[in-house]
Amino acid sequence: MDITDAQLQGWIQAALFPLARIGGLLISAPVLGDKSSPGRVRLMLALALTLILAPLLPHTPPLAAFTAVWWLRMAQETLLGIMLGFVLKLVFEAVVLGGELIGNSMGLGFARMADPIRGTDAPVIGQFLHLIAMLLFLTLDGHLRLIELLATSFNVAPDASAVLGARSFEALANSGVSMFAGAVSLALPTMSALLLVNLAFGVMSRSAPTLNGLSVGFPLSLIAGMVLLRVDLPSLRHVFTNQLDQAWTFLSAMIGVGVAP
Image (cartoon, rainbow, N blue to C red; front, side):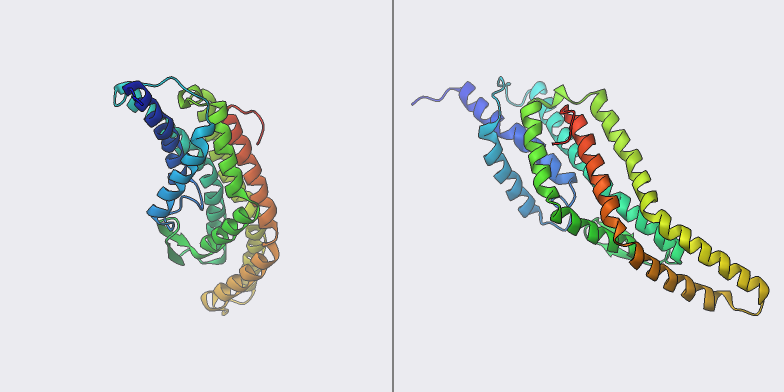
């Protein structure tokens, strides 16, 4: 059996273009693309997803290999994958930001730890909430839903250039706005209660000037913050679930589905 150059280029293209989008997703996606995941594991996962999804994708006209158009298509597929994962990454960053706001209100703004998952230092409260968010993401089958959305993106937009437009970048910008709103909604109840605690301690300090603010105020704020965080912790699931629902909506708008998968 003779294999022509066009057939060979078509087979390579049918595997490389999906691999570029999947690889871009695994670069920026939470949990699956975290720095704590070994690179070999992510590579094997990308190859496995490509082997599963490539035979199910619609046929596209082959392009001349290693030309300018071919490299542009590879860059577009990678960019779309990175954008899909980045929207979900913002949800987890909102949780970390909310934890940092809570930690600052508790007086733990100086307490930071090396975070191997994010590749940087993070506040202790934010890192704690980030770990809980990862467990919630896996419990809610977020990783499976992400793979399902990835497969839908190939069926809706086999060519990434068809969806890389104003609509997709607008959805990406809206997801960034939602990140800050989610961080504030997560931290606001605890921050408001800690503000009342600090105001009450300020009144006590004015009525008793001999009261040492550092030796009494800091432990008081820390204990109150821990108690309030324990009381407010169940609401993290509701806030995180709402943020995930908005992220699925943004991702669906980005690929042109219109509704969440």
